[in-house]
Amino acid sequence: MAWASSAPDAIAALVQCLQGAPGLEGVKVYDGPVVDGSNPAEALTVAYNPEDGSAVEGQMSRDGLPVAPSLEQYTIQCSAAVTNGNNNAPAVQMVRSRAFALLAAVGAALAADPRLGGVVGMAQVGAWTLSHTQNGSGVVAVLGFAVDIEAFTKR
Image (cartoon, rainbow, N blue to C red; front, side, top):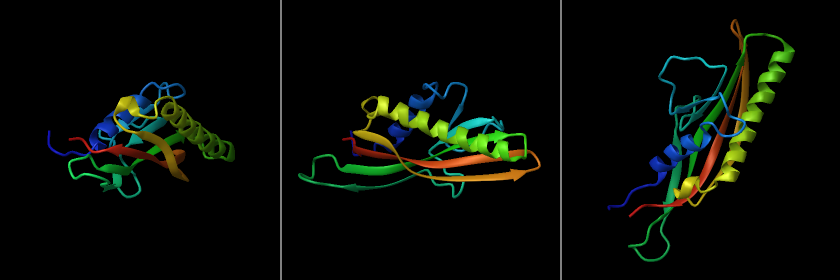
């Protein structure tokens, strides 16, 4: 097999890891940008940052022989979104708390399978950013977060 990045397989493994993971039952998990037109109250999006459209950012380095796989370090951009039809302070607090509960469930799923079934060397939650807005439909919290990956290229 020719040289190849592990990123596509890692994204697929991350989606699979999160679908139905404890604490994420009933949460819609999307692979990439939402294309089905649904608007669930709770959703996780893997490999898509709604702020700028980015999916994965990384770098590679080679230590040792040129025939050895390269070390890859990359970040899979993800987000947790929670909506509520109310526009009041308790609704803001609820969506914010629930978004962080979803992030905690993602962290627990990765702690239970940090190698994503052997696809990567290590996967863990990294940096995160919270935003929330109110509009005529209620309040929404979006917690953008990174899943940091260390892996080797495939050969």
